[in-house]
Image (tube, rainbow, N blue to C red):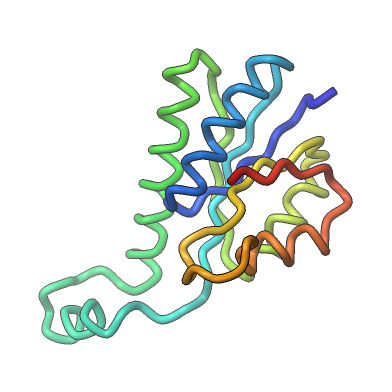
Length: 146
């Protein structure tokens, strides 16, 4: 039923819960797993920009964001490895998260998207902005984990 599962990850505790749910679903259905991180094209915090300007940090803004994406993906992948689910495909994209996730799901014939009900944004309503936008954009089944 769910042959290809996409798990968008952002490093938040909600994404970690989604990873746990996706591990369970992937084991039940012997699914292929795709882990995706969307890099928002936003500015770094003022403190990091000051460290870059002072020469304390030598990486560019994009290098910092790409390195962070790789760490987030590797941490999620480790959980699947621990569960005996081999070789989840890990990728990051640059752009608006909801749009990029929906496009990735369509392009890769994903059967199920498993995601947290919110991400790193401020607390507020039940659904975070990315989750809400994604649910409106995609025709792929979604499992929203609280």
